[in-house]
Length: 98
Image 1 (cartoon, helix red, strand yellow):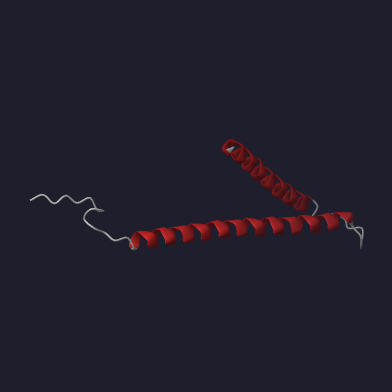
Image 2 (image 1 turned 120 degrees about the vertical axis):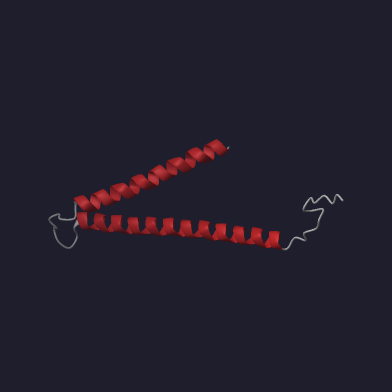
């Protein structure tokens, strides 16, 4: 099952990059097009691509923030648990040989 999840996450990452790259290329290619007026289909598609890029960037930032917050919380909890342990000679594996 883990191999399937790895392949699926890799395919999704490739699709994410492909959509982002194609949107940027379309905007760059059609930036100086001859606009036909109020209902220009190229301008409408450029606006759709801009919204898509904005939403993809926002979702990527949100995921990064959530992962960093999770990492911070886990580290804080682990450090808190380690600080509150009672340290005894037995738990520290100290041998008292005289």
